[in-house]
Length: 375
Image 1 (cartoon, rainbow, N blue to C red):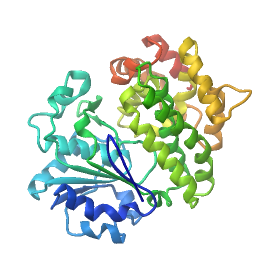
Image 2: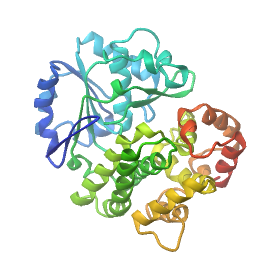
Image 3: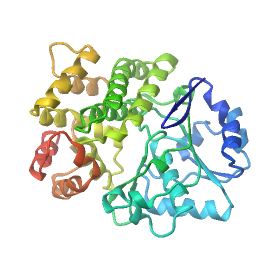
Image 4: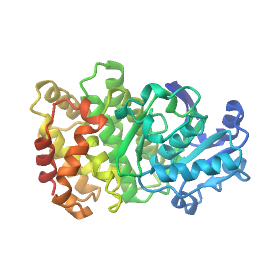
C-alpha cells in the first residue's frame, strides 16, 4: 500500500482496505453511517476481514443509480437517529456522492438546493462538513478525491455541489475490490474515468500541473482498460485503471466540458436510469469533433493521441472504435432517449456548471447537433 497526500490523504494499492480501522481512529469517527448499495453488498464486498470494524454500525443501502435529494434525506434521518459522527462510503460514484450530500446536510442547515454551485452555494459550504471516508469499488468517477457531488433534486434538476470541504478526508483505493466487476460495468466506469481525463485536459483553465496528471491518467486508462475488460482478474490492469480514475478525480479543479454538461442533463431523466459512464462514452467522440475546430484544443488533442500511441486516425474515431470493442451502445436511442427530450436537455446543459469550461462556447443548437449525431 502507498500513501499519497494530494488534495487529501489517499491509501492506494492492493490490500489498502486493511487501513480502514486505523483511518476511522485517526479521524475520530466512533460511529459512522455506512453508505453503500445492494449490489456492493450482494458482491460480498462488505464482508471482508477489513470491513469487520463496520459490523455493528448502521448501514444505508437504498442508493439510486443517480443519487437523489430524497435518498440524501432518508440517509440523513438514519445518520441523526443513530447518533453518527462520520460517514463511510463504499461503492461507486453514486454512494460516494450521496455520502457527500449527507455529510453536508448533517452539519449545514436548510434545504440542499441552496448549496448548489450554479445557485451560488459554493461559499455556503464550510469546513464543518462531517468527516467522510470513501472506499471506491469501481474505477471510474474519481469522486473519492473529487470536490463535487452530483445530486438530482426532487424537481428533476441534476445539480453539482462543489467545495474543497466535500473532498473525502480519506480515500482508500484498493484495486482488489474491483476484481469482481463484470465486463460491462468495467467498461462503463473506465470510460467515465477516461472522459474525466480528456475533458479536464482540454478545459481552458490554466493549470499545467493538473493537465500533466490528466494526460498521464488518460494514457494509463487507454492502455489498461481493454485488458481489464478482457480479463477482470488482471490485477495490474485493474490497478492502472484505478490510478487513472483517481488521477481524473484529482484534475476536476480544471472543470469538465460539454460531455458532462449533456450527461448531467440526461442523467436527470429519472425514468430512464441512464448510466453516467455509458452516456459519457457515447457523447465523447462527437463532442471532440465539435471542439476540434478550436485551434488550442486541436493541439491538445494531438498530444492526447501521441500519449496513447494513436497514429493515422483521429482521437474521436479511435474512441468510437474503443467503445465498440468494449460493447458500449453506439446510439442514445438504444438507451431509450428520444428527440422529444432534446430541448429540455440542451436547456439544462447550458445551465450546467461543466458548460462553462468547455473549450468552445457552445450554443443550444450546437448541443442539439451533438445529440442528433448519436441518435
